[in-house]
Amino acid sequence: MNDRVIQLEPGLGWRQARLALLAYAHIVVCAVSLYCITITNSFPGVIGFDKSHLAAAILNVVAFSPVVILFAIGRFSFGYLVGFYFYMMVLGYLWLIEFSVLDYDHRLALASIVLSAFAFLAPAVFITTPLRQAVVMPARAFYMMPSVILIGSAAIIGIGSLYNLKLVNLSEMYKYRAEVALPGVLQYAVWIVSNALLPLAFACFVTSKRIWQAGIALLLMLLFYPIMLTKMALFAPVWLLFLALVCKLVVEARVATILSFFLPVLIGVILFVLVKAELFPLTPGLVYFGTVNTRMVAIPSLALEIYNNYFSAHPLTHFCQINVLKLVMPCAYNEPIWAVMARSYDLGSFNASLFATEGIASVGLVLAPLSALGCGLIIALGNRLSAGLPAQFVLLSAGLLPQVLLNVPLSTALLTNGTGLLFLLWYIAPRSAFDQTPKAVLNENLPATSTG
Image: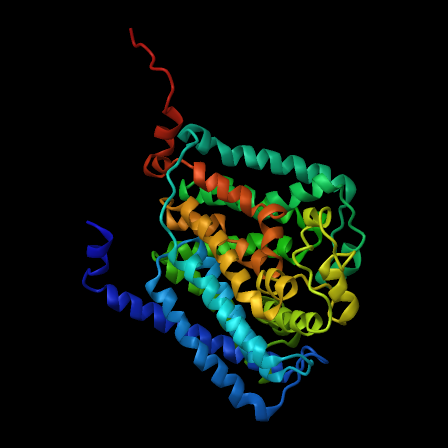
């Protein structure tokens, strides 16, 4: 049955309607979450709550909300997963911009981010045609690969612990993280393994029902925390386990994508209300809300606000934040952009997404949509390289990448955080391996034995 016939199947329209309703419910919850963040004055000097601007913020959200229909009609892919998270980031900025106290052209910024969102989402969500596999990994090697990743990860953890090993709580994490000094090669290995290879191994183990090995992959991810001292390292195992549970309970990968964002934010909003009503302990409630709702929803959106303000009055980077380009072109900045932001604003170091870094910082607001289009085409390449793989496998193996891409430039995600390597492994993965039992895969290509 071809795609055209499949799209005309009875009931498909109702499934799309349910997806749209779920996405709209998530928009409402995120708007409530942003309201809670705004009224608590979480970002003094940047965002200031003004009740007279509340209607404008709501109108921005309502006006942009129909874009969510793209996720009701689009098929699941890597770009679908990343695109939904970016959509919510843009939605958050459209709320926050109405309470901005920083000086820049807010109307131009609003128009630029909306056009950038469309330019990114169009290819990222809808370009999914597969590329012909010129190289295919043998099914037996693919089955053994995640075990090799576990062994390599354990070795990297062992080496990394020789340079830094500190068990500290979240309140002291930033203090000691400044002291972390790993050799360059080891630092790259840590990032690539923790953000790309171990999630890939976890996805392989889950899809082949090797539960104990999946647990070992999560444990190894957790062991990166005392070496890296980042929230990502601490919460990544919990996040991937949460995604695996959602995938088990929900067959549809698109629904799982929306729920992966919706449920954590909803819990945070409920806890915020309960804390305000003195029905839940203050500290755990606000720690959860601050970690999930503020960090997960507001900070990536706030980064757009910060970058818009800074680069409205300072030279653009013209992509010189990519270290290789600094060797062949002049650059107005001799230090990483996150360090520039840390020095200029009292909000800590501010890495940011491709919309802020490859867009606002590199080419400015007018050309930012063109940059977003280029980035969307790169994400679409990931769709094409992973086409034919089970949706659950793609979702789990890329489970950490939406959070990575919300907080670092695309160039950094591709090279430093292992996204490019994951693309390659998706491309060469044998599609037939997912249709075979583990025993059949292990016996594949083995010489036949004579029974005499």
